[in-house]
Image (cartoon, rainbow, N blue to C red; front, side, top):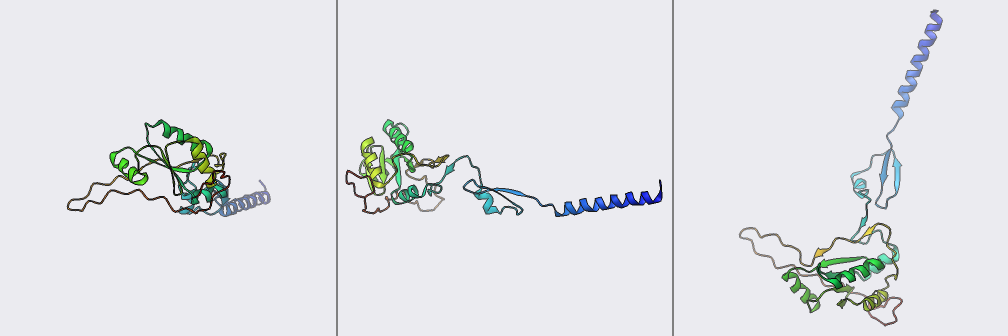
Length: 214
């Protein structure tokens, strides 16, 4: 091979190697990030630990703090939170749960199973029958589709389901929190008392033909 052509080919190979090395040095890793609202973004910066926690599984939204709700519904839920007190073997409780779920009412559920929880329910409502519904400071004893709907209307809850797709209410919890066994020579703490319903405004909500006051 002629020396000139050999030198030319060798220079081309060296130049190509330098170009490839420079490209490899400037290439950057692209990270895919998903925020708590499900928005996908791409960045050359690795996600922080907080961002990773916020972009967890997207199988459903379970937000006891009412995050992810439409603005108006979130305002009503914060002003007049709904709590259902029920039990497993209670047909009216099932009907009550169906009404709230079908209408799209965000609510907490507290189960009443033990004698201690029955006593706590009596202290809260003055009776031991189920279900019990609280809307703000209002207590509705026994299930009544018409009455419950009137109070939900008066509080300002929408009449049709406006929850975002995938929303899930939190898991039901016992009315009385289970206490750990006390350590030796430690004083026994009294049983946990159910928190009283939060004080609510006296302003009635829209769609309140019954004139219900909160």
